[in-house]
Image (cartoon, rainbow, N blue to C red; front, side, top):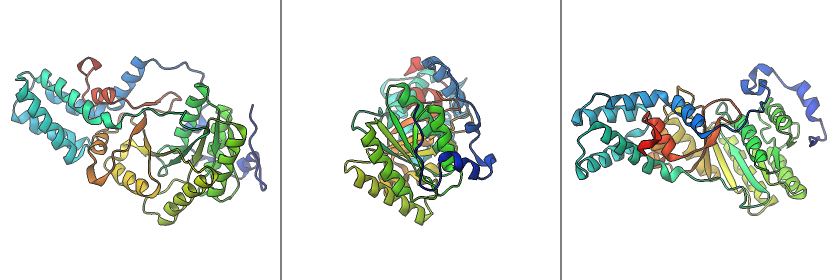
Amino acid sequence: MFKFLKSKKSSVAEEKNQAVDQAKYDTTLQQEPTSEPEVPSTSWLTRLRKGLSRTGQNIGGIFSGARLDEDLYEELETALIMADAGMEATTSLLKELRSRVRKNNLSDVNQARAALQEILTEHLKPLEKQFDLNTSKPLVVMIAGVNGAGKTTSIGKLANAFQSGGAKVLLAAGDTFRAAAREQLAVWGERNNVTVIAQEGGDPAAVAYDAVNAGKARGVDVVMVDTAGRLPTQTHLMEELKKIRRVIKKADDSAPHEVLLVVDGNTGQNVLAQIRSFDAAIELTGLVVTKLDGTAKGGVLAAVAAGSQGVRPVPVYWIGVGEGMHDLQPFVASEFAAALLNSDMASK
């Protein structure tokens, strides 16, 4: 078992005694890890459909008993906008649907629904990208996001997934801004049997620098650097993010190899503002979309794919539908499109 590195001021164990109000911790950190087997694909698809059921029922229900006429298009427009797809993506999707209906002489609403699912899949496809662990050793991954998006929880789940795949992982507790952040990451480290580099009250850039050098010295496969949760409007913290990125590059001139933003799927169009701000500051390479748990609308990914509001279509590596260890899965455009329309995969 790995041992946690100790800072000059305090060990991780001592930090536990100093941590403030444990009620502030993520509820998922209070749960013991499970030894559940890998979740079958069908089970994941079922949970994804349930997670996006709000949008699926709103959009998919429009086709039930309807006729393929102008009223249908108007209802679809309203439903897509209400699902946070935005005007740009909605206009593009419906324009293509009208075109295919005419071109293929479709007259049945079920055919139109299948066509829309295919169009939506094609629209989302540019966001689909496999996360490659083998592009560098160690692969240095910098992870950012606003507080409450599920950043630390996602790091823990990814650490578990990477280790299950045979990769050796090291974590850096670079969120020195929030009192309980090191504690939270330490708990995930213990659960996953992963080393955590931490300092009490240390400079986050220094923590990241030490972690990258430790990863190189120990021959680990992945170094994941946590950063302080912040709002894009907090200029001093965004500047700190830029500094962390620069310092990581000093430790390894090809790093960071991946820069991920964790976003809450419930925040709708606000996701676009977050992507735009963080991308400008630290050049994002991928997204992790969390909390698609039944209340999220999900259509915002269509807006991301359309480049709405000046957003660059940043790839979506993973989406999450719950708090379980296996509830974070790779984003697949065809699966997501089917869930958004409350359809099965046969129509893709």
